[in-house]
Image (tube, rainbow, N blue to C red; front, top):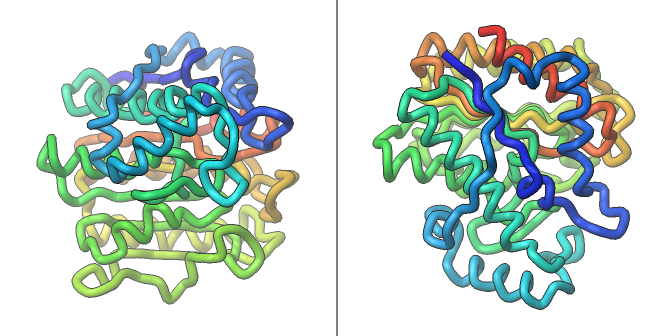
Length: 313
């Protein structure tokens, strides 16, 4: 079955101005490399769509959604403590990230695609009531809550290989036993957001459903491979019905904001193995979301590796 690729001008607008690391040129860097590798001809390219305020509010609080709308109209200031600036149209750009993710989910659940990839997505720091870490709306949280409320799918695997801990997914579902969480990231003692310690494994009925694996600065492919075996065993033990991959490329060597040293082979391996997990447990259903990555060559190579593996299933 086919792989849908979500990209376009409306998604590219989710990028911050004035030299911000998360600039609007990130999508183009990926698409140029994907074209060079002859991947765009194989993927079924889909146009972005915007999410309604009601769709965004499946995860976020209505007062927060209204706050982003007001700040977008104002066009200046900060949506958090300074990392995530407002700009004219930031609400519309963030709503497009969510809407495109929902379009991908709808395509999978309707049987039109088995896999989707959205390079501008995976905004895993935003909480239900606030922005954080370049993330305005948490498209992942909206996907999870939509799977539950609209499709009756409860057991969902969320796997995060971004260099930063996915705190905006972990804490809202920390006590949810049906959200199977696995996150390999740079040690929070040395990097934002300072969370994701190994002892954080879920609370209450969810104890043991969450796997956090912090790696020390400088860790590379070998250390990832050892941690990855634990992730695969964790997923197989819980047999999820749907798989979400947040494949931030800021874990590659040379990223300006972090200190892991992966090669692009890590992202290809993660995508390949998770497609196999999805085939075993989830009727092949998997979504890939780009996440972070601030060296343009790195993100292009890493995300092309993910897309290639999705296409080769």
